[in-house]
Image 1 (cartoon, rainbow, N blue to C red):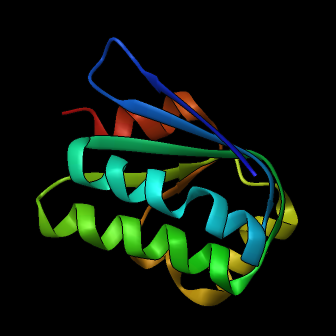
Image 2 (image 1 turned 90 degrees about the vertical axis):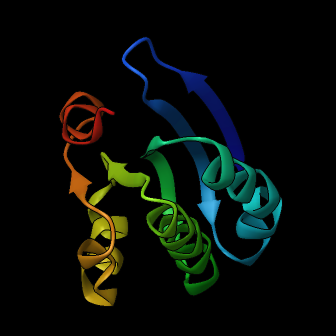
Length: 112
């Protein structure tokens, strides 16, 4: 699992994930996602490059979103592939973090 982080000019941070967000993928990004949750007020996680989402990957996303919410910060998801979106919706993740079709729409929804 690859994680690329980019601070955008509008105060939003973009975290782009590429690969499989399974047990190994989640372990590879857990620490970095926790750091982002602790330091960024507005985070868009771009899932367009994620081909598979398992429960451990879902846990990573949920823990990050909850940590940010406790600080009054926001995290949303952008551009999940259909099979990934299906898992997100079935788990109720959309009730904790918004899911948007593209990065621009997601960023506009959480700009500080």
